[in-house]
Image 1 (cartoon, rainbow, N blue to C red):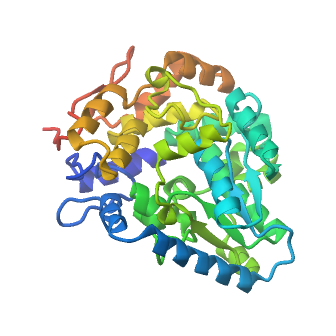
Image 2 (image 1 turned 90 degrees about the vertical axis):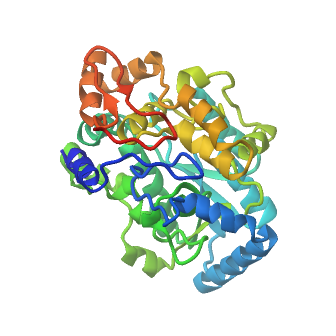
Length: 397
């Protein structure tokens, strides 16, 4: 399989599991980059961010927005598009673009099929409409969505790959169709998470988002080959660069200009605006914020699978942010990650199995193919057991 070959290639090049000296990012993260001091790109950016006034960066972003709008000269009723999901980050982004930047945003949601979307997610989208935003919801064909979810699980060990492709592709596709030249996303995946493949000309530039691992891994032929109705593939395909240039589309990240961008701050702000959360479920979902990916449950499975592939999951990503903001120490982050990273309840897994039409045994048979056996022991009748200690470099002798 494509993913197995990619993993073997990585493991042949990098035998050891190594950690950033400041956070819990591992060298097995796709497109990870460490400097000569062993510091990951996200920690390096965070240090630079601390030395630069966010008011100065906000002014830079505002100037870029003015130039983009001037270049476009669109007659649309909207200045820009903000992609939303019904979660904390996109809720706050929508308010920030409208109320802080003074723009007229159109919100676009690449919604989950009814069988997959949570009631909390549906309620939170309704809340955005009640707050005065215009919203377009673009939903994939339900049966095709379930089929692609299973196929991406089989081929890539990723139950959410097709969903992620839909999310990132729908927003620019509709921007092109509606002739709206400006798109906003929140965090910069290169600088705030550590995916160097999407790094642009500066910290606001999102025009290399098409290089995101989830969009490029394995290409798109597998989608075409999996669908009976071939025209449905367009929902999942990221527009080409020629279409971007023709419509003069610009993508900007808001996070670098945001003085308190974080999971915790966004959760607090969004909840004050009426966002529904799910407190007390960290032992079920592995989500220590109780506010991430609340619009559907399958992503919790993907965070668990990410942990088994790369040695880190959602909890490590969350504590990395807190470490960089000096809210906790690295050792405190290790204790949290040891407890919650890779957590996903049997109830969530069973719900996914029912959704795509497989048994629990089928699920683990597929999942175990993608477990990184250099750092985990695979068990036929139980979950994998890690060989390593989180935060400590490891070599499987």
